[in-house]
Image (cartoon, rainbow, N blue to C red; front, side):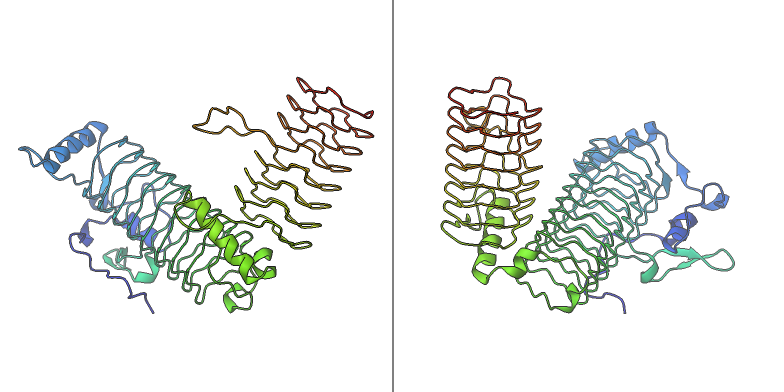
Length: 479
């Protein structure tokens, strides 16, 4: 069955089948692009950089309704390696063209026709491809980082392939899907795009926006979707085998029949989460969503929305005086949250985002804080006895728009007895009156740190950097 939920008859996007080169059609049928075996009659028309520049100028005149203007048509042309940087080519026709290795950075291609294009290794960084038609296009190895593909059409299309006599005939929907395999699309905005049956294998979509995207039967196996926003996305029967969705937003996403074998969903945010749902079989699921109560899950989801919307939506998390001892919050984002007096004894807090969080008076005894982002954190009078902070970030953070040039971690009067801090960057941290007795401070960066009246009895400080540190009133000996 083919996906018939999307309207495939888009006015103004028809392409002459006879104009599509055999090489493009062969690729749609699963073959490699031949280099020199195209029949002479089907060879792509080579264009020079001057030809392209002339067409761009005429297209600008056309867009402004001026005399001498003409809509740019590059259909069936070889445009490989040419320069289209910052060009305005909205509505231009590139159907069946070869743009491999071309430079289209910051180009405006709104509603452009890129049907069945060879876009391998094309540079689309910061380009605007909103509402562009890309069915059957090959984007293998292309760079779509920071590009805009809002409402772009990346569904399968009707391409051509040679029959036994070499004549071009229509190819079925199932063999002509848009191919984005191994592409890079970091921070790309693909909101409301149509990507049913698209081939997106091993593609880097880190921090991309895929709100309400239709990915029906799309193949996203082994794609990197870390931190991406898939809110409302239709993933019905999609293949996400081995995909990385750590920290992804999946509110109201549709998972019917989705394959998630070996997918990494640690830290992903769901509006509803059911471990027993069949589509989650074989996936690496976020411990926190499964282990914590409904109230806590709701709070974490609302906080994630608050962070991602810069405070416009959702709600800041307040865990004041809560006791979550022994539970896992690994990879959860609680940056800028209020966690005063929270009890997290023995908790797995590894890789958490605690940037600028307030954890004063918290009980973090024996907690695992390895590789947590704790820049600018406040831990005044917190108890971190025996806590493991190896790999954690406690370096200062610059606050934009503030007179404060550098905001270090605040650990005044904190108890860090026997804490593991080897190799941690604690430069410019405030550690006045902190108890660091027996702490492992080997190779720790304490440059510019304030250690006035701190207790360093039996602390192991071999290799520690104490340049410009304030050591007035420090007690105890160290080796």
